Image (cartoon, rainbow, N blue to C red; front, side):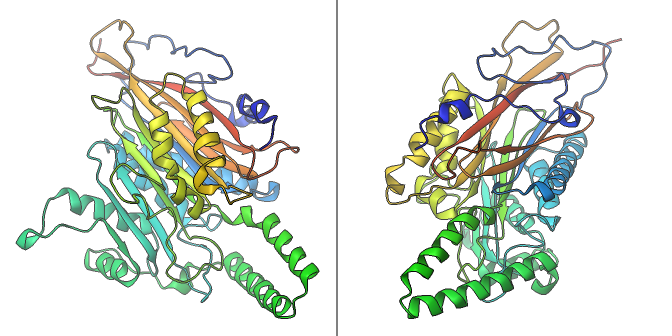
Length: 438
């Protein structure tokens, strides 16, 4: 572990000038107390309330493509906010954000996803509604342009109750079964070859050549060449982990979370990553995403979306661990400890030298301070992101903002990816005027 990690963890967010937070968004760390913004103007008739935080993956984001990654995060935020402004609940807004991320050729989800060993695209996606705790997930699905729409449809169908003859509706489908179910429920198919891009095809050909060379090396017992190959894989591996995700709070304080991915490059056909293994054995163990509204035992509503090496996230159930941690008093310290103790130093990953992953997290609650009017309601949202990979691209926006803010968080030069972590975040107060005041 990097001994000076605390220096990274304490670093406040410093976006570029064009991405500076609006007055409604304030850095809370290190050491800044939460200072809700001033009382809103009573004559403000706007009822737009909500917040979205998205990520374009935890991995490596080159400077040459930084603009494209930021741009797609902005579009995803705007798409979610448009849905919130139209009165949609959090679960529909988070699905809208994921569609935008899946449609981008620069992300490893939907269009342009990594190709598997057979040269085909198989995607995973999942979504969770914090209000009902229902979820939907698909794994290794091919021939569908937006896998998150299938996951969302599964969620919606599950909320309708039992099927004929008392059958339990599915919440997690894979492969051909997921594809056929999607078609039967009105989701249009998209040929796999149309989902591939020039970039994903060239990456597949390049990786295939590497694998063929590696097989020759291993068959020839060339130890030094094999060692160099493994070193190259370690250097390039984190760049292939760009799962996308989003978390949303709506005007009612409901939270929702979603993730989508094309999986690791050259994965074995049929592999399902952390995305669809949302729950491992029971409803309290989450790996890919998690969303849960405030309940008697939980003072905060929480939402989490992860990215990184699926096997690492599955074994540590990172999304659920981070959600639980967010019930502590200090959100920043709680996430720091969860990432360190439950992920990097997890006993389930004791054999791993390089633990790769990232999370976006938010928690929210109704403001309990004295309000100037019972017609004015406020939700306090604390949002963070953390990663052990070289970088992570995020975007965030409240429904009261004119445009989204974006940031590519990076480990410092001396940090070692997979053994160090970075953590940043902010706070936003969402204010709703429930009645028109003259």
